Image 1: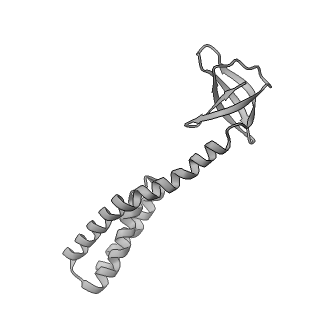
Image 2: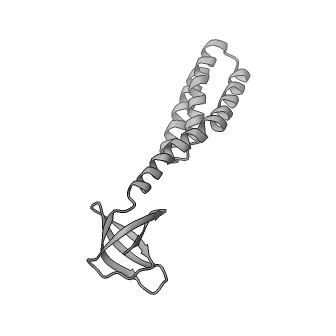
Image 3: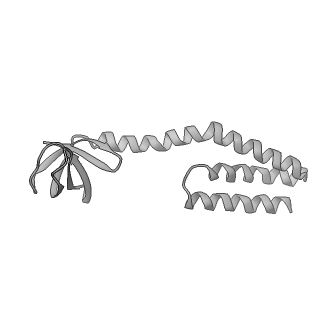
Length: 139
């Protein structure tokens, strides 16, 4: 009974990580998976729960920061490698703000871009940085 319970928890936590990608429930899934072996050999519910608790805390405190750092590194590489590329202005959305809002074509997709400079449609601009999902451009 114990091994089936922990196996079920493993699947529940792993599937919940797919729907709630917060990099939390995957560590519970891993702890539940390891607890399957404990349940098979020891058959003591209190020891299993204690083992699951300590493994979950261990994975969250010591492994999660490294995983987040590794996963966010790929995002930073994308942003920094795209600086200096040219984009084409395809639409002016708002020119009244100090940061004018544009739609630009970049690598076949439409992006929102911000700039202090005024561009006309069809003109090219240079990427200077990224802020979230927006491109910062200049002449």
